[in-house]
Amino acid sequence: MLFLISGGSASGKSAFAETVSQKLYQKRREGRLYYLATMDLYDEESRKRAARHRQLRQGKGFETIEQAWGIGSLRLRMGKGDVLLLEDLSNLLANQEYLGKDTAPHETILQDIFALEQKIYALVVVSNEIFSDGILYPEETQRYVERLALLNRRLGKQAAGIAELVFTVPVFHKGKELFEGLLKEGNDRYFAKGER
Image (cartoon, rainbow, N blue to C red; front, side, top):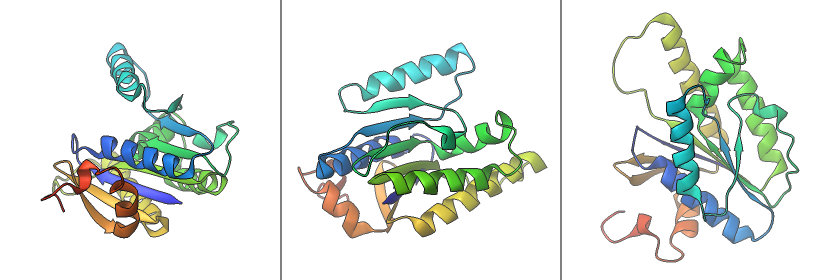
């Protein structure tokens, strides 16, 4: 089962994706809960940011895997009860292209994600909404934006659920009932009065 969570910078998409992943894992009550972090730790600032993110996840049950690109080469013992949160698609695409020197990174990523999805119970993918600024970019950047849009469309077509976070409020584009079934349990904050 595949879920796609998107949103702009600081929209709350990561926290929402963590909650969805935890709820999926709790529902299944078997396997492992993985967090696949795709940030390239290339300098002190990125290492500090990753350490902060690890600290924020402490106590949430995630086993963190850090892999900036080439997720098809993951050698984990994954099973049908596992839930994996991939954070995030935009980093993975940039890293796959520039660090992995992949000439068709979007196709490689799609193959890898669909292969991972077949091995586990649920895969939650976080992506960035970067498509509405109206800015004309240089050719290389425009190619990246187009590839991310293609990834989002192809994953969205396959996904059981799609949510976009807007000012920390989820807007459900697909599978609303599925999200509600997961998140309403325990009086979850995403369905508090007035937030529908």
